[in-house]
Image 1 (cartoon, rainbow, N blue to C red):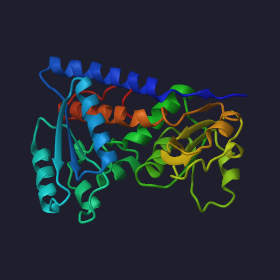
Image 2: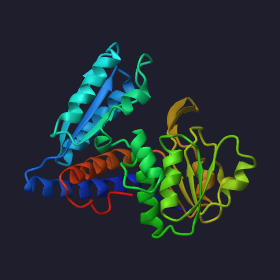
Image 3: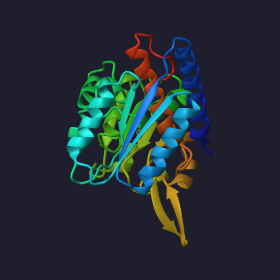
Image 4: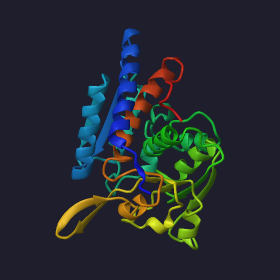
Length: 295
């Protein structure tokens, strides 16, 4: 058996098309969604990511506001900027690119963002709302994973799901989202005893542990849907390349469906950032939730 490859690029393009449709509707009402992205320092990977976010924001018809600050910027200045963005009615979503320089407290900075504009879904209020099954801004990567799982499987109710990884950014919110879909959820990690056996129980296996190709084919239940969140840069045969947390070739032979790396979960992260911004704009203007773009 060879698994179906879930095309994240194509799915992300579909989501961006939905977002563009909602943006057009908002413009007819005289409202243009605005996304503010703040970058502190000159981390090359962050610069590329911020540039891509800005490009895609404009492509779907939204306003993009980029704030690039020197690495030595005092924390108080960053907090003051966030305060101004919180108060700006033209800004519906605020994202502070991580990681921040060492002299800044990331938790303090994230929790300074208005929870209604927290399109990353990292504010402690949104974490609490998600954890208690209430309306929240949902972290982009787990939201993208959920969208792809729903699209491929339909109803997830009653399925066994295993999330490998317990980070605040992916693992924990992913588990909460799957619980919300009435899955039976296990959170596993590097210290889980007999990890392969735990994973083999999963109808949906989400790998978000940050270790290159750790999850091999013998971790996978035949026919399972495997969602690989990992993005790891390695060198192989003298070439630098991207691989996931799943050993793709061995899992491909066992799974029913699998996301590739690159081209799987990655493109969905920015698409869901745009979706969250449109959702935030709808909520701010008292409009109904955008269908198909929320958890």
